[in-house]
Image 1: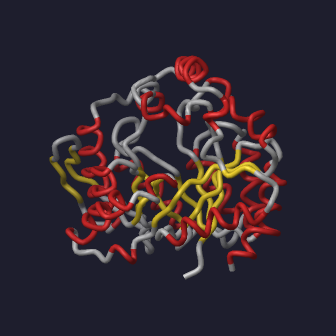
Image 2: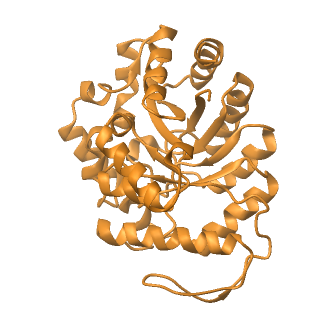
Length: 326
């Protein structure tokens, strides 16, 4: 099966109207899919934006005709309750049947706490996510649902416009317990290149799938890959916007993006930000990075570039990288 190449549309760095234009360009360039980030606050204050992703997806779908669209990722357990997520993505799937996916995760305080949704330790967040996934699937069947769970209660609920083609649900995970949960409860995994290269973690994902009666070979594995189509100096020039990256896991409990930025600027040299990025103007470097991930079982690679000239990145991949992979 050919590797699918996706594009990351970052609500943190760009106004939503510009992201819609990037989606049109990405489809024309031959990208297979696109996800939008789902944040109430950006990761850092200097990123400067945080549009509502479900609105953006609706407009993107209207302006495109083929590309698959989804979130990377939505947290359906604090600021968003599961019925709200189920209804929104059922509506998107009604507009664009077969083109919508729902990416889910356990969230960050800068979104959940800041929007008044609450917060909890990882065990609670993971348990909420699992319960939410089950509720969303039940609602998508169009049945009357009564639910009294550990975290959510629905006295009587029905989605009157249930999706004819339910969107696949992909779970973001990187630790061994989390990737196993993704195998058990989701239709696929969203992760980072390091996790995708970790045989032990991928084995945990496969065990979770098999324990749930699924064939792990049939489950998509989506990876977000940071790239810079340019030299090291250009990469360093945009690295301040994504300085939190190397310590992102340490910032999950911070609700203020100003504090996240302060911590990142104090603790992370800019050189460390770009260490794992694919940097360079040579197409073969980018092609080989994607082929390496494909050989490790990755099915979809989503390209994330912080460069100011997104049109150049999209064109570069459309002209040189995507054709080489096919």
